[in-house]
Amino acid sequence: MHVNDLNHRLLDGLDDLSATVVTPRERHRRGALVCVRSTDAPALVGALKREGIVSSERAGNLRISAHAYNSVEDVDAVLAALGRNRRLLA
Image (cartoon, rainbow, N blue to C red):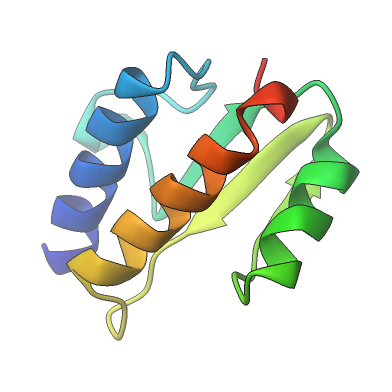
C-alpha cells in the first residue's frame, strides 16, 4: 500500500510536469515501476544519478521504482530533479 501511495504522488507530479507516463494508470494494472517517456533516457538516468537518484532506462523510457523504504520526500526529490531536467522528458 505504501509503494502504491508513493506512486500515486509520483504520477500526480509527473502530470504536473506534463510528462508522458507509459505505465498504466490503474493500480491493478501496474506494479512498483513507473515508466516515463524521455527524449534521451540514458542522459536522464545520468542526470538523476548525479543528483543521487537511482533509476534505470528501458526501451527509451525512464524507469522509477519506489520501495518500502522510500518516503514522500524521496518522491518529491525525484520530481524536483525531473523538473530541472524537463527538456529530457517527452
